[in-house]
Image 1 (cartoon, rainbow, N blue to C red):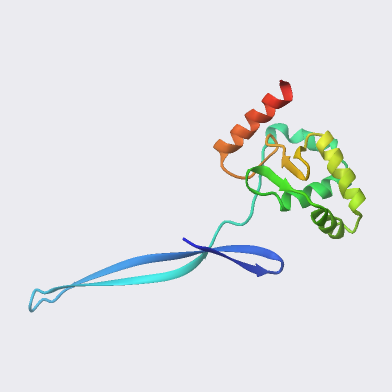
Image 2: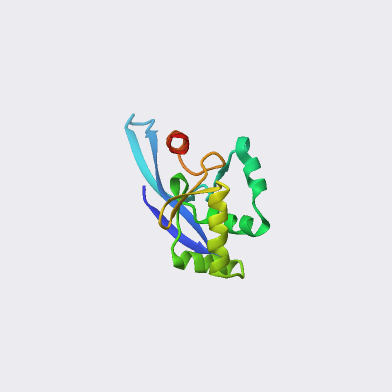
Length: 156
């Protein structure tokens, strides 16, 4: 199965190339001859749109953030990769600042405050995770491991 990207109004729509096989069998009543015809159909189908899960048990943590931090958070959610990972380079900060009609300094400050509020978790320079107790993107089993590792690091 192959995937390709199509840009539409700035959104990325993923499509799958799918194939189906239809088999038609006919019997000639006069001769009794059985004929089988195989038809291969190829088509494209949309995949599920980009999404993120919101876990309600710890949603109250979002009450700690300001409107500005919330705007930055929403921009971060848009670029979150599988298993809650966010790569944030200067270029990404500039793009977020432009989207919000703001400055890179404001994005950096908001990112720091989101980290302090434990909405995002700094993993390394330029690498963050969305808090796996609030958000989830990816396989639940793997997200559960990330949650367990986060708790282990936080409390040990």
